[in-house]
Image (cartoon, rainbow, N blue to C red):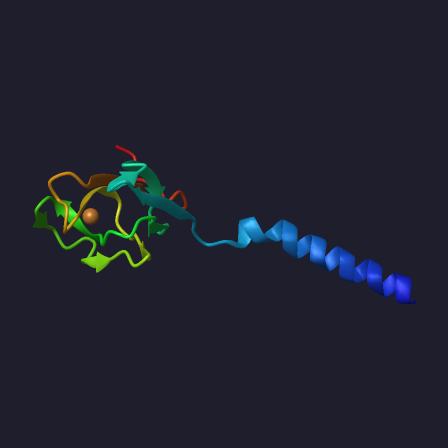
Length: 122
Ligand SMILES: [Cu+2]
């Protein structure tokens, strides 16, 4: 009986472990700030994914969207202390930059439309 129960529990654990990646609703794209540079500077994600910036240095950085130094409001200004993450719910290109070092710290997020959404025929 005990052996039987353990078998079932083992199977359930296996199912949950296996099902986990499929169950995840969105993915998280990682951008690291290393030597005052976004790495990778250009990322491609899908609509609904989360983008997470991680600051690996002691210098303060703040992320916002737009063509530096002009904000466009797609991503509101946030300090990366030491992380900042946000869900991207619009397809297209999002330029972003560090508010404090906008002359040099810039990146681009390419957001593809979600696959479950049918694109109309042209
Ligand atoms: Cu910065």
